[in-house]
Length: 426
Figure 1: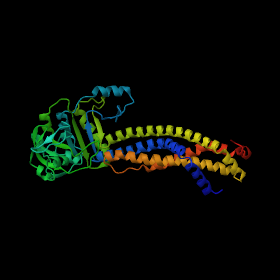
Figure 2 (figure 1 turned 120 degrees about the horizontal axis):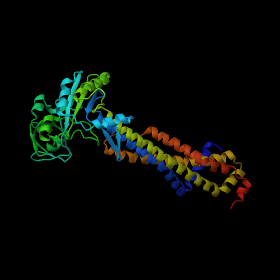
Figure 3 (figure 1 turned 60 degrees about the vertical axis):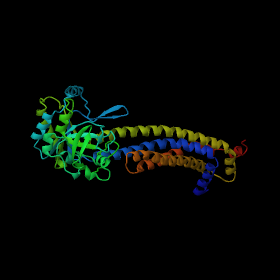
């Protein structure tokens, strides 16, 4: 019996037991579906993260008063870890000391390394912006910064002008608005927003300019942001608990580590730290947040592989049982095939191919369903259609192996049947 004849006969036997085959395929598909679904969603989230944090160049870093903590699933994943309990205790004792205006300004004046320094102070979030006719949803964030903010964070002024040092020092009510805000308040004529007075959280501001539209994601919408001076934020929303963030952009990525060292050396005396004391501030490189989140996504991916593996073990056991039932039901058929000249090899190959084909059908169904459902996340995050090709190929190979393993014992049992006994089986 040729290979094509064996596969054809196996397919006819599978087609003849539609209900049993369907149940087995569904069991097999569940494990692959869960794996491909979550992997596809993770790839979509990773693409969105890459887009979100590509706005800051690789030659940038920032100084914050405390480390970032990325929360996922109720847990906390810190971007910085310490193995030494003594160092951790000392660091915790220094935590909570915000970067004040005087410290941030002193750093900007004293940092002489080639590059640019920008100061940022977070303002109110989730606010409403309106003019005399229109208003936005309560999802606008306000940032206070200096004239270097746009360049350090990848923003471009498309209409009007940027903040000037005079605007920053005076702290007057002027701002640059995101493209989404301009379009919402002045539909189809964003240029009309320049030099108009708008209400930002019930405070009147004159619009100096409009930022060019830039890529956003579900994690951060860069077009729903209002930029004013940090002195304006200090004047209107003064609080001792609010900390400045210092952004630094160097001219060459090759000297980034040197620039970080210089920044630490400059800032430690400003923070009044002794030589033996740990830093009470933290350095964030431009990709640190993305790395932290992607690390969490990596843990999720590994967990998904474990779940899929357990599901596939259960599917393999189920498939083996189905094949053993098939052997018992077709005992007379096996005896007849042997009586007509069928060899043990032919019988064994037939049952192995049945098992492999059922397993592959489950793999294909799980992969297609996983990709389609997983790309709902890509659609929500506004990323391109994602196909995790490496995992698709791996899923097909794994399912083929599972089908082979699950069919070995039933195929061996079928090939060992005595044709005389098999023909008399009732």
